[in-house]
Length: 165
Image (cartoon, rainbow, N blue to C red; front, side, top):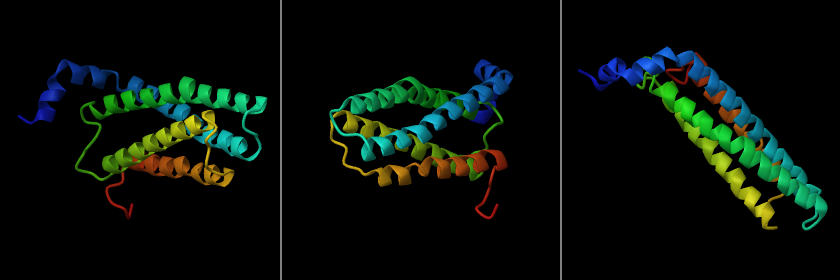
């Protein structure tokens, strides 16, 4: 008996299958919240780097907005995205790991998580008054989540099995 067959017969496998649509819905909601933060925080950094002088009231305001966005929205949304995503992965019959698309999606989600961590490090730099990047860097980096999102969506929805579509 394959391990996957055994998992499908377990209570957990049955539970995940029964609640698949709920899990998928919560995953999509979490992703939307996470993506909103991944789009917005770099934009805050652009203005923070280009316009705001360190040590001013505006600097403190930007630091507060950046911290709250990261801690209250982005971090919980990323964690929820991972939790619901992993639950979907373990739902019997949903992911065929012999295909290319889940590996592509997984690599992009890891890259997105790495970008999230990079943003968190840049927020700490701003908080310490040690930002070393120009607004242009944050503008360019702001495109990364869009590119990753496109690959993730096409991978998960179209279920690519090869690069030629």
